[in-house]
Image (cartoon, rainbow, N blue to C red; front, side):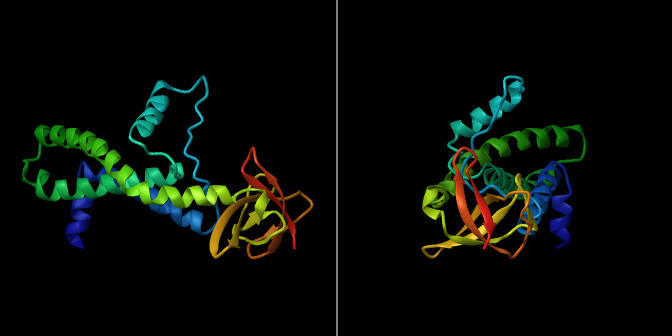
Length: 208
């Protein structure tokens, strides 16, 4: 455990440790239902005309390596995890032998870039089995679910935020839901799916 902490907090592994910590916190908060967790399988990056060149370049890199078909947040999570694992063992078995100084940081910076680009094709391989699952979920997100009952998964539901769990043919689906301002819904409440908003990929729900 002491070695794990020591290696994880050394440059360049420390950078990926920080990113991985942020990812873990994000998923914990999502699990508690405090933020909207998008599992629709849509990984398109909305880049406006005023967006930076670096953002569009990053989106192009993801498309080049086939990092599509599952939620963007999940892709980033896997990329960071793969980067951290590679960096950890590189730190442990390679960079550990370098003397501290400018050469160490130069090699560490170069290794970080190499690790990132190595992680992209590895992530593409890891997410291949997941693409079919999210495609099935996206197909199920349609008018075929209208009239079914679900259970609120987030602390609250409004006209801009909310999620609900629904069992459909043995599979548990996590749907983005919205409700009218006149309704007061909380976690655990049963609701009825009354309308599917295709442009937003969300459902309008009402109390059961």
